[in-house]
Length: 293
Image (cartoon, rainbow, N blue to C red):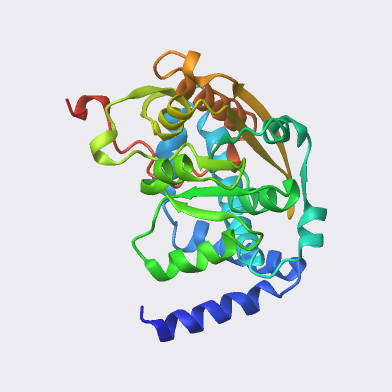
């Protein structure tokens, strides 16, 4: 994709974002039908992930989750586009933080905090909403995409309300060197680690899972508290979030304790409403038997 086509796509996405929510959800219903029934987008991946994660559920129960997931995925696609032009007033009406003081107490103590969350509910709304509603500096730690034009569009959306975008590889250096006051750094903690760092596995959703250790490494090095950010989808276009401090003193924790804590917290959330997690991601492509020494 060259810059000319990028400009066209960027403009089209902006125009789509101007459409009212009710019309976007009509488009979402159409997209769901196409993804689920016509092309079967990654249905085999979703079915395998659900079968391995919920062996105790019946095939019918897993099929119901699968179908709800694809409806949610289609909604998330158009809700994310809507972020391109949504006003701060509209976002505040549709996204509520239940207990902002749970994370702001660290800022008031002149202490930055590391926030762990996952690809749950509308995670793309979560970070911009956090940035705007808390009125504090936010770093969004993201995994760079192979398509740089797509990455540019997504980063424009994510940073609309003042967040700083930091590539995952630069997170440690940026967090250590930031000198402009206390901040929040938000990580999608359920990402698959890079191939050279998948030698640690912990139980997650009924199976050994290679875990991302970045949050724990930075927390233990800096002594900054770790907070879990639980987003919840109330209904189409309406979300809420709850903060929970997991670790006040990271340097007093044992090896992998922080990672186990935020991973267990995410699993608890997923088991409550499993249809809102990113099941189409190939999360378990690394196996313990392939671990690098």
